[in-house]
View 1: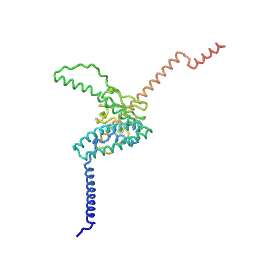
View 2: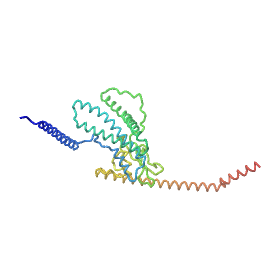
View 3: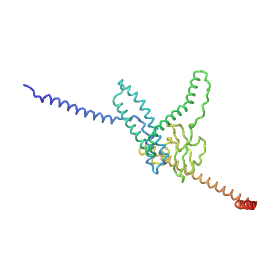
View 4: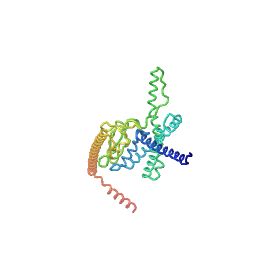
Amino acid sequence: MALSIFVPIGYIATLVVSMLVFSRIYRRRSALNMAKSYQPWFAEGHEARDIYQTLVAADPPAPEEVLKAALLNRAMTDVRRIMRMRDDKQALATLLQKGSIGDETMARFNLAEKELEAEILDVVSEANTFREGWGQLIFPTASEMVAHLKHKEIYYGIQRQREAEVKKLEDQGLPVPKATVELPPLVTPPGTKIEIQGGPQGGPGGGATGGMPQGGQGGPGGPDGPSINLPMTGSGADARVTLPNGMQIHPAQLAALMQGPLPPNLPPQQAAMLMEARAQLQALQEQAQAQHEQQQKATAEASKATAGVASTLSADSGAPPAAAAATKTATVEDSDDA
């Protein structure tokens, strides 16, 4: 008995449909499993982006200079990630060819690349809101700053490396060669203090600027009002400012701490410590403002007293006023001409 032509066609159609259904279900389950076990490529998060978004949403709004500095710091973080992913991509390609890693790792890397591309576009658009065309220049500027910080870290490490080598030679009993080239002093040595500018009314305001070395006395930081000094350790990304309650934060976070609301995802204990530090800084600024006003008042009284003594001495000596002297001179010149 001959089979119908529809039998093999039906068999092939059933096989194709079964494979399509299986492929769809398998890919859906694989995507769900990857989403559950997904770990970001940069586990440390993006602190610079969070700081910038906090400053943008601050009430009252942060100064434009602070926002530009925070955006530039965000671009510097992106530049570091671009360099890191460029190196990781070459290593991952080699490992994938050898079969040392699976497709999940490459999928994570590709997703991180797409996220970084979106981050770069966001930074460029934000930069153009401050000034048209700055988006084309912000990443070259950030690259130069990152290179400068790397050079700075290497320069700071020369002395530590020399001390380690000297100690190694001393432990081995070998002679220690004398340095033929003296290192110049550090431009910004560790231990620099951060100066917080006071607002016009002595309230919290202003940004964080490089202050004086340790041991310096805090004085008026500018025309707006007095300032207070906070000790800073480290440099670059490792810089930390010590708050009055002993907590250490990055200098770029000072403006967000003093002006804007705290991030909502902070742990309760950390948020409480930051609120305590903010209250202490505000109290220190109010105290500095009061001392500054007292100094200004004392200076004004001293100037007034000095002016009074000078006028009294001038009246006792019988010296003519300046206007009268000028009039007399003009009269004499007229008579001579006549």
